Image (cartoon, rainbow, N blue to C red; front, top):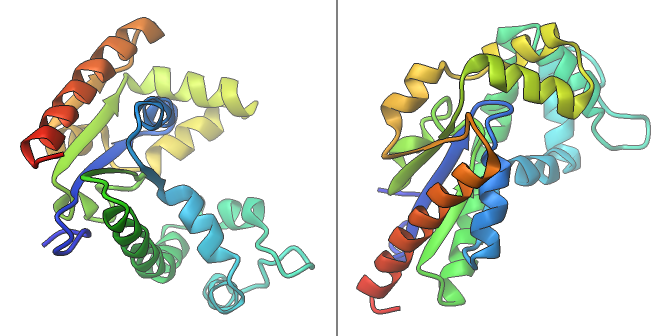
Length: 211
């Protein structure tokens, strides 16, 4: 049983810790022509639904809208990253809604003839979605590199970056779930070579299914 149901689509679950470079890999795969469904973006869209935002506010114990009916994501982030129980409550609300929307988009991809679809899922392991995809690809780098990249990208303090990393699954847990590991501890050129090999493998799967 996968998120694709009986559509025949081969699902690739792409994940990695904060600052690992999974979004970079997602862009490379999209440029190669594979549909990439970014569940972070899906989550943002789901959270903007009034009924969902109301449920989240109730779970957070306060209004987390921005005053204009949109979610105050910064405030939500501050709450859930300092309170594991609130984070779990948020995930309990959002994950089923995200999963339904992802299933719908996979169905659209199948109808358009796609044979391989990539799901970019930051919390793939935490949400147990690694069991629902056909291939788990983990973008990996040392924890200190993750933290430094996050701080450089966002301007956040290193301590905040450490907190973001700690809120996700441990590196060992992600690696244990991986079928393919892309090492992004070095230069971009090295990552590109690994992604090229991954793309060749996925093309083989397409050809093998008659694509």
